[in-house]
Image (cartoon, rainbow, N blue to C red; front, side, top):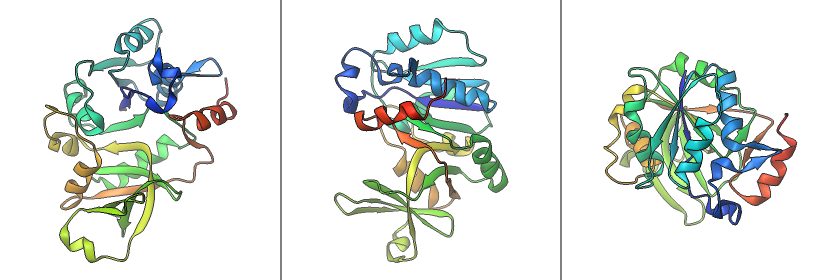
Length: 242
């Protein structure tokens, strides 16, 4: 399995912790978020892991190089320009093994999601993309109809985006929250625009969903936390076993 850990963010919600270190190196019970997620992915069979870097990029690179990992770790360097989620994946394309799916994992997600089940779900249905989601309140929701991504909703502004104009009239949809983990087919990754500037992933998923299968993997993980903010970072100590 190959994976990309998105670790380049500025970590603004975790300031002042991230005034002197990148979010990826913030620690829980003496272990960095990067270590926790690299080792989690390795435990599920990942042997080819790409990590993107920007904020304090040199510190992340030094950290990776100073440790021994049971996988090949590659650096996707965004130290010049932070490329957002979509741009980050496109920028890293030369570091992936061609014609194989890529698991995407945000560095600030701590969860008990079974990665093997997610991968099996993706392999069974062979979609363009499989998105780990759950029923929970978030500011932004993905909209699905008959297990197909059809739109996106910002609850704060009540803004909607749709995969096709025809879907605007669809009242039959389920709102699910993205869990920061996905599996992307090689075909989808190849369809991404060149990373000449930053761009987010969701609009690319919506564009793909107009003609291709983009499906949910609805998990019931007992543990799921976005530890990119102080209030949940404290809670994460209960979830990590040394």
